[in-house]
Image (spheres, rainbow, N blue to C red):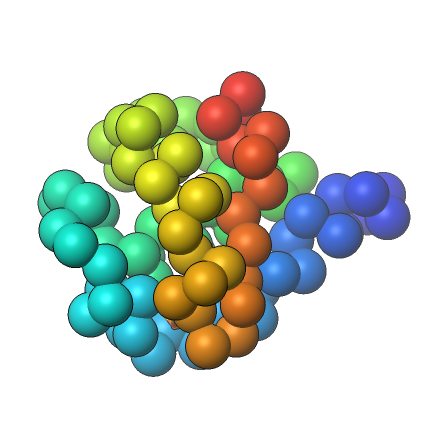
Length: 89
Ligand code: SF4
């Protein structure tokens, strides 16, 4: 795996599925943060056969992605970040 890809996966891979982000955020829609983080991690992983199609299957809206990119680092106890270029996936 290329180092730049591994760097993108590193932060979401540390999610411990604690659910704090879910509890701390105003309702961002049907997608729950911890599930979103795991889904984003897989969508960014070149070993995942679904790739960008995974985001469509998850029905993740662009404005929800932007919401998480902006707010997740300050809410998450693991300071997880979502790469901004996920919106281009
Ligand atoms: S708060 Fe962070 S570690 Fe906890 S579920 Fe959300 S993204 Fe994962």
